[in-house]
Length: 124
Image: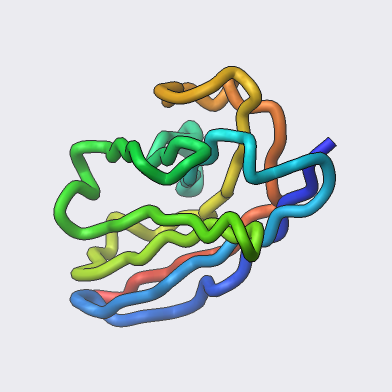
């Protein structure tokens, strides 16, 4: 079992930045590939970014490429999402997730463990 707790969400103006954190605990979280997803009201949960267990490989949704950066610190069992140049359409609840399947998964049903989510609101 892996427990995930997100933090760092909030209200920011368009063009601003936020950094989300996800603290992991439980069974060797550093061995899991991890990702960030988001869900806006009335929409399905969508993939944002993923990172391999070593941190050596990353993947991003086209909508956030060049603006968001995913990273992890395995010594601290923490996952990060640096979000720059935020847009109103980035407004959503952001979730971190972990998967035991390995690297390269972008569908929410491929992830085993989820945090409770943190709200990000971008005003225009």
